[in-house]
Structure formats: structure tokens, C-alpha cells
Length: 83
Image (cartoon, rainbow, N blue to C red; front, side, top):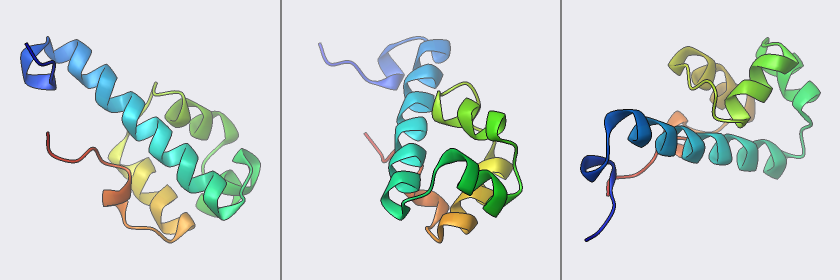
């Protein structure tokens, strides 16, 4: 049996995807050489908001768009691909 978001509960699938988004945002930030503080200043979010996104607690599309613009990457870089 394979495990995919469709074979587990919605709540758990959301957490898995959120973690994937968090890791992608963190990797993109680090690739540019930004600290959380640098990114917060550049995109106009608070340090805590960036921390929540990078810990998987928040994946607000509006915040992800602001971060993508600040890092000059397409927002699709943060989103999980098709399984």
C-alpha cells in the first residue's frame, strides 16, 4: 500500500503538504542568503509570520505570494507537485 494525501485523512494530508511548503520556503530563503529578519523586511511580514510559515503552522496564499515576490521566485516553487 502506498501512502499519498488521498489515502490518508484530510487533516493529515494538509499537515504533510504544509510541511513541504514550509521546507520549500525555508530553502528558497536560504538560497538567496536571507535571514528571517531580511525576508520579513523585504516582504513586509513580521518575523513571527515568516517563522509560522517555515514551521508549517501557516500557509496563507497571500503571505506565500508576498514571500515569492520578495525572493523573486514563482509561487509554484513553494507548492507541492502532483503525486
